[in-house]
Length: 119
Image (tube, rainbow, N blue to C red; front, side, top):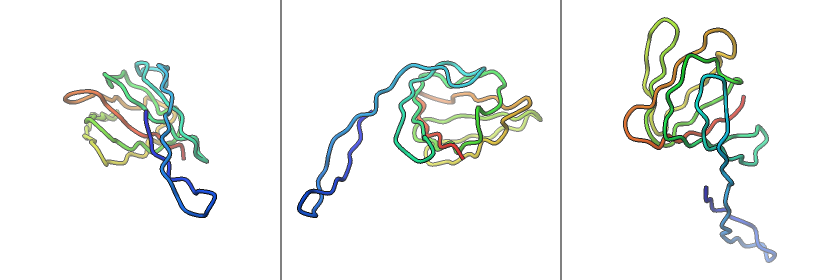
């Protein structure tokens, strides 16, 4: 995953630097298929996730975290059957770290991309 850094130069100005976040195929949580994950430097250890499929079985969140949808649309179903859809720019605070959890389903065309930021 490419990114651009705005760096301070020795003379006090600024410049662009190109960087890349290495992505690896990894298991994220029980009940969720493996996804391409890249670590980004942050105080909270934010993660960038990209997946061709976001369908899962019922699972609790692996930790309390913000989910920032960047691309694609997901539908989340909670234990009472209520469903809500989230797309680019939507924020979700996943705080169901124990119990039955929720089901996440990809809607429409992949890939699905999101930024996960631990609380």
